Structures are given as structure tokens and as C-alpha cells.
Length: 595
Image 1 (tube, rainbow, N blue to C red):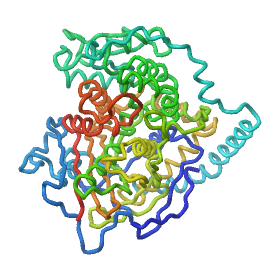
Image 2 (image 1 turned 90 degrees about the horizontal axis):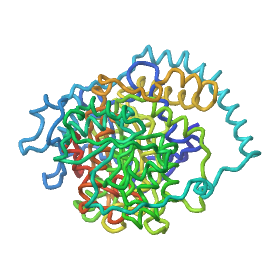
Image 3 (image 1 turned 180 degrees about the horizontal axis):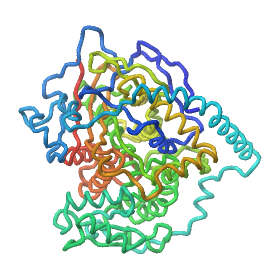
Image 4 (image 1 turned 180 degrees about the vertical axis):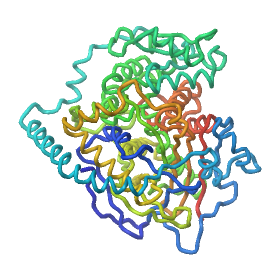
């Protein structure tokens, strides 16, 4: 149901690996699966006793008898928390004597932070097999197959999918009311959608990190209801004596959006689903020369925005950067740093293969679920040329990315006991992350990016053992199948969180993300990285990633890799600037060569 697989061979592989090509199912729809797994721990796997559960796939195999050894300090890049969060306070003894965290420090930070990786019991696995599989095979799957067949016949016999030009004609023309020079704009960032789950977290982060008196940054919140926005500021501690303005704007009322975008250097939007609420905002930002960042995971919508407004953004200098949260900053920056390290430290080598293995625990909100269901119901626009592969100026990129994401369960191979007993399974957002990496590879500068003209990308999630892997995998499949017919889909919507509902503070405290990256160069050099986020990655740390992305665009334009306007990814738009801001506010990152 999820992938088409075929064996492939490459010169760096000792064994065959499957190529996974997503078909039929929208990648963003997979978000509904987070709450469907069969026991209370969230449906992610991690590591045990601080040992990284991620592993090297066979493309990153190391000959027997050799170990992963760190080169001299000059060959490693280590970035750590300059102001650690409270969860890291107990790790005062962690950093190396030089003051920077070692690679091993980053790996072991999870256990020092008291994070507990989820592990499903044998009883849960048995229940999934004895009850869940017959239910899936005998009821849910036949319903979904029947409905999807019926829907396919209707599509063939009915009205064809709309072209993007038809959607563009439906919008009212925008008349720009004068563009204010960037240096004269009042705000550094305006937070749009501040009354939602992630928006409230972003407002709280802005207030606690950058203050409300306007001395560090000047910011405002925006949304439809002034009273609700004022309550958000009160809860964030920004109401008493603060200088945080409230801007009333309705994303579906185009006349209200002039005030939203014309007087700020950047808009940071959490107002999703973005296919429903984001298009007008992107258009206004592109035409007013305002920078823009959001947390969407909606690839089809972003493709549409590139097609419609890239010329405007290039003309005005607006930098439009989507996917600035959990989808897909950690993975996009990981690939960027692996490629960069190969070029700078390994004799101008170029990245040809990259693997990311994720250790994650998180929760889901009603807004995310609503986005997923909306993506399932949308008609997909058609294009003569894929905007996703479009460079600035309109030229198509000839740089390609081969997707080889994990589709089934398999043991994680390893070069040391660090990975013993771990199992790899498909990651719910791997298709979205892979698409973002694919666009980064396509639009990155051919000179100096460290990326080959063709890059193979693989992503999966690590599970502590086989029974946990089975339960997680079964829950993923069950949820996807159940969501794609109206009967079981309606039942899901009744039991899953509603829009406006999100994870509790305790759930977010327990959350974390650690991405282990492994890269292979065209000359045979091998590098590895680790990226650690100490809070719930989908919400609390997504809020931080979004804010720091918008501030990078607003406050450090001269330092950004993106010169001029256009549509960028986190890596191509902000790159090292964003990574530096993240590691100074709570994340940890390290990259090194492997001998």
C-alpha cells in the first residue's frame, strides 16, 4: 500500500537495498498515525540505556575489525547548547574539557536528560498480531480497497484534476500598496497563528528567550481574534509592560493582509492546514518583499506556491522558506552538513549517499490530524514541468535524488555493539523529509555545496527490539489503511484529538529527537553526524525552529547562503546560520569523519 520496491545496485554497496517510491498516499496524511498505535507510548522507537539505536545501512558498512574512531579535533565540528535548557542542567559534567561537547556527549545526552525510550511489551505485540491483523485483513482493508476503487472510477469518469493556472485565476488580483524598505520596517518578526497549539508555544518561546520590551527584537502576534491573541500574550508573560503588538488579520480576508506583511521583515506562520490558510499569506509576502517561514509538511501546496509566486519573490527579494519545523529542518540540515564536511575536510569530495536513522518520541495535535485528512481529500494539480525542481530564474535542475526510504522492518546492521539488537522501520514523515532534501539537492549551488549531481537518500526510524518494531509498523499500516475510507476514517476523527487540542506539558517534556546521519562521498570517504533536540520535536522544538528560522531571515540577511529572493529550503535558505541559532538555544550537533 505504501511503496513500490525494486532491487538496486551501486558501487558502494555490498548488498542490495530496496528503492522505495511513494505511490497513491499523500505523505502529509501519515500524521494521523501517531495516535493510533496500540499502547500508551507514542509510536516511535529510540535507544536503550543511552546507546544510539540508529545504525549504518550496508552502504555505510565498515570492515570487520575496524571501529568508529574520531579524528583529531580539527576534523570534527561540534556544536552544543550555549544556554542549556533545564532538562540539560544535570549534564554539567558532560561537555569535554575544551568546553564543546564531544561526539559521544551528544549521543549520551538523551540518558542524561532522563528521556525514556518507548518499548512495547510482548503482550501488546501479541494483541496486535491476534486481534489487529484479522481486523485489518478482514474489515478495514476490504473497506478501503472497495472505496478507493470506487473513487478511482469516479475520477476517471468525472471532472479532471484542476490545473494550477485554473486555481490561480480564482484568486482576486493583489494591488501592492507601496513597499516599505526593509531597514524601515517596524517589526523583526510577526507570528501568525499565535492562538493555535504551536503558535502559543512560539509566543511563549519568543517572550522567554527574546523578551517583550523590544530591546532584543521587535515582534508582534497576528490572528483573527484580538481577545484570543491578548490571552496568548498574557499566558506567555508578554502582556504586563510589554511592547508586543497585536495585529488583527484574517488569512481569507485579503484586504486585512496588507497590514500583516508590509511593516515586518519576516512572517512566521503556524496557521495550517496551509493549503487552506497559507496561500494568500505567501502571495502577499512574495509581492511585498517580506521574508516568510512556516511549519508546513504539505509538499503539494508548497509546489503550488513555487509555481505561482517564485517570479514575484525573486523580483522583490522575498525569501520564502517552508518546512521550518520538525518537517524538515533536522534532516535537511543533516544532509547539508554531511555534504559540507566532505567538501571541506575530505579533499573536495562530494556526497553520493546519505542515510538518516531517527530516534524520536513525540505527540500529535488535532491541527496536524486535520491537515492530514485535508491532504487526503484534495485534488492534485498538474504541471507541464515540476516546480519542485525549479531553480531561480525558471531553469529546471538536472540534479537528482534517489529515494530509498525504509519501507519494511529489517535489522539494523552495525560496526559496533552500539547498534546491537536494533530494528529499522519506516518513519512516518520520511517521504516529506526526502522531498525537502530532494529540492535542496536540486537548487543548491553546483559549486561548493559538496553534493554530487545524483544523491541517494534513505531514512528510517530505529526500534529498540523486534516486538516494538512490529507494533509500531503494524500501527502505521493500520492507521493509513483505516484513514482512506470514509467509514473508519470518520471513526478515527472521533477518537483522535480535535483542532486546538495538543500534547500536554508532560508529554512535551518527555519528547525528544535524535537524528544520526551517515554520508558516503564519491571518493569513498565516510562521515557521520548526530543532531539532538531535547524537547518534543513536533511542537515545542518546532516552535523554536520556526522562530529561529524567521529571525535568521530577518536579522542576518548578509550571512545567509541564499542571495536574493525566491523559494528556498531550510538548508539552502539559511544553512549554517540556522544551525548556529538552534545550537545556541537548546539543540546539539556534531559531525566527524570516519576512519
